[in-house]
Image 1 (cartoon, rainbow over the protein chains, first blue to last red):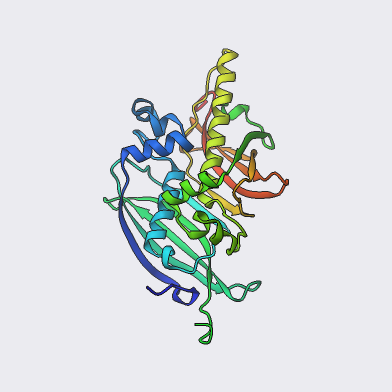
Image 2: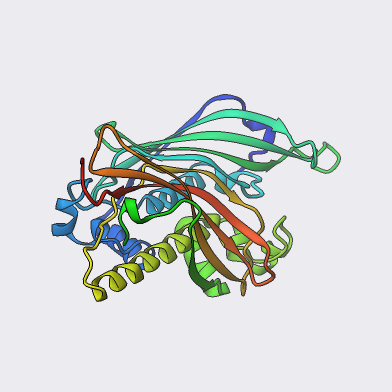
Length: 153
Length: 160
């Protein structure tokens, strides 16, 4: 399997990944450990919340998006990590049983000035449920190694 | 938790500390972010991070854990004083998240939260909207993590 390098990321649509089923058990397990608010743990409390029913933590959704990106392309990319996230929008609640699809668009790709052997690829990830409702949108740069020269390969 | 009216811009809360052990780093990474530098010491040493590094989403998840624990402390204190407890709403998102320095195995990160802005919502008069800068600092007093969070906070006299 070839490793994706900076040169493989061109502005435009990159790919669609999934589906990834999210179970009630994993929503509860993540919430117990990292986000034990009643709206993520307790059906009765969740029904009375703004989200009107049990929902997954937004940070759980982010972590699942990370895993979907890993399985979709980062796992075979010369990724060197990310400096951060420009923006994350939680638009609709993550529900037990949701089947998630993740669309990745490359918003920008440029060679790093400080480290010219690497590039900065800024992507926009949009995660939707099976009904096509957008649950979250993330804009984030990742650092990707450029293709080594022919001699090094 | 506190009501919108009781929260002052510039107020800061220390949320507590968390030690990212190698075991916890690998456990989170195996589930959500199995890049080699989050799973293997040798791969970590050979990466930009210079050691086994926690996934940024692990750092973000732990910060959320500390924020919730702090909210639960405030709730217990309010109940002890016989006050009404505010139940916060969900967050519409965040901006400007920065993984400034790697969080390496054995690092202890202290988290804090500073309120930056607050405004009322025309669309939802019973809620106010609060922005807070949440940060993590390691045991060498280096800032490693920062983001600008947004949350719906209930108003004491809803809609009045």
